[in-house]
Image (tube, rainbow, N blue to C red; front, side):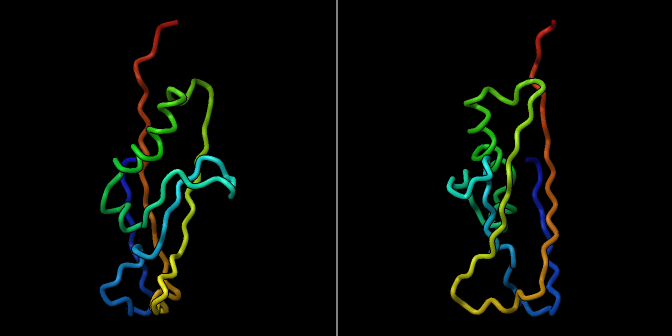
Length: 115
């Protein structure tokens, strides 16, 4: 993952200084199986602040280190699950709001071998 950014559409302009992204938890999953725990979870705001290096190391590096990367002719799937975190306080200011999420992915090919 290379870049992560988002903008909040504050419909009623009533969020004050509170960032909607602080209330959205992002879970990264390799297998779409509810019984399995996410590989990594973080709020959207933290993800934007910490940058893509964190996700690359916590999600992708661990998976592909054990399998020595994505093999030729193969593909792999991962999912991102977004959850609104109820913090027990009044969060009604976010009703009707939306988030536009922009993510850039970069893949690199390692040096191959001639066949």
